[in-house]
Amino acid sequence: MSVAKKEYKRVTVKSLIEMKSNKEKISMLTAYDYTMAKIVDGAGIDVILVGDSASNVMAGHETTLPITLDQMIYHASSVIRAIHRALVVVDLPFGSYQSDPKEALRSAIRIMKESGGHAVKMEGGKEVKDSIKRILNAGIPVMGHLGLTPQSIYKFGTYTVRAKEEEEAIRLKKDALMLEKAGCFAIVLEKIPAKLAQEVAESISIPVIGIGAGNGVDGQVLVTHDMVGMTHEFNPRFLRRYMNLYEEMTNAFIKYGEDVKSGDFPNEKEQY
Ligand code: KIV
Image (cartoon, rainbow, N blue to C red; front, side):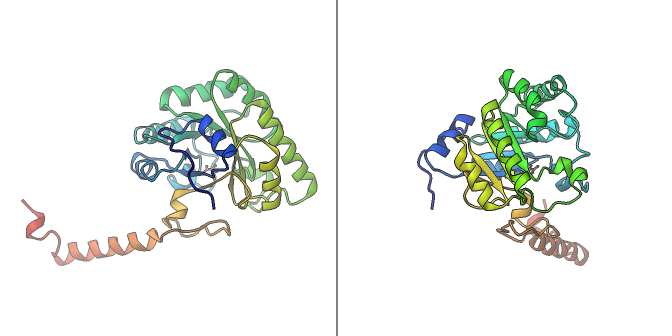
């Protein structure tokens, strides 16, 4: 079991690299709004990801593709206002960095300037290498994201486990090395075999944060709404639900509805 070895008043990209070398696992969760970010940060989670999963979770879209740069900036600035300790990483949304490195840099600068986020995350390997380098050259920390990359869902057609075949596994390992060499401070590996993820984590010096990538990596990330059971239709094997908020909230809403209809709410103490 890994235990906290050092108190971090403020988590930075440097702290994460230090955690890896001290064999301290890194905790990361998503948040898209002030109230949730305040709870996550207060609980001592190291990294808050303003993920483009906001497109699914907050807006109800089927994929992450529709969310815009303006919407990501809105979510990220709400999160930033809540945090005292966590490092806040913001996803560059689909369409904001794929066309060319200059546009990628413009998008990353908007995120840093307009939201106050601390770093950006980008999906992909060698195909986005030039954009990553350009952003890094401007002093903006970049987290990579390999394996299942939801922004490419229409290319793959399914959300199943990635890199099970040797050819894709070799490509993923090369991409991870390239991201480290380019200067990324960490990499997310999503939904790939645990053995491959461990191999990658052991082959590079920057932290590897897994989601559905087993326990041999340097940290874990989950979508907060999934792990607290606010969502209930998404049930991948890698998801551990720590509560069933969907049920608890539904029961609270039913009870409130009943109390209003019956005239039980508000009672004498709940009025002026
Ligand atoms: O957008 C997101 O929530 C993510 C995580 C699943 C890693 O990218």
